[in-house]
Length: 186
Image (cartoon, rainbow, N blue to C red; front, side, top):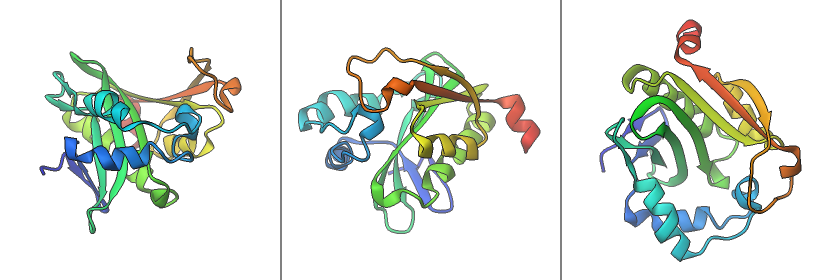
C-alpha cells in the first residue's frame, strides 16, 4: 500500500478495511483508552460502523485522508494511528493533531517522530496554517509529546462529554503551533 509519509522508523499509510482487527485490539486495551473513554472496550460492530468510516474519510481540501495507520518501518508491525485532520473539510488552514499507539510503542519516541513529520508535511506541502491538539489535563505523556513537537499551551477548557471519566474533573488542555512560529524555529 502507498505510504503517505515515511520517517526514519515509521510508515504512515492510509487505513483499509483489513485494519479492523488491529483497531479492535488497540481500542480494547484499557490503558490505551484510559484518557479517551475511561478504558471501556469497543465492540467489533463499533469498529466497523463508527471507527473505520471516520478513519477512511477523505478530506477534499487535502485530497487525502486525515488519519494514518502507523507501522514500524523495519517489521511492518501495526503501532496505532496518527490524526492530522482538517477541522473544515474544505479548508486546510487548521488541522488537529492526534495519536493513539499501542502500549508496546509507548516511550520509544514514535508519537514525537510521527507528529513532527506530519507537522512538517502540513506546513510545507498541505497549506496548513495552524496545528492544534488537545487532551485531558491529566494526560502528562500526551502533553509532553505536544511540547516536544513544538506546540505551545493555549488554554484550559472543559469539554462537554456525555460520560465523565477519571481525571475529566480536571478539564482539558489545548496546544497549538502556527506556520509562522514553526518557520521561525527551523
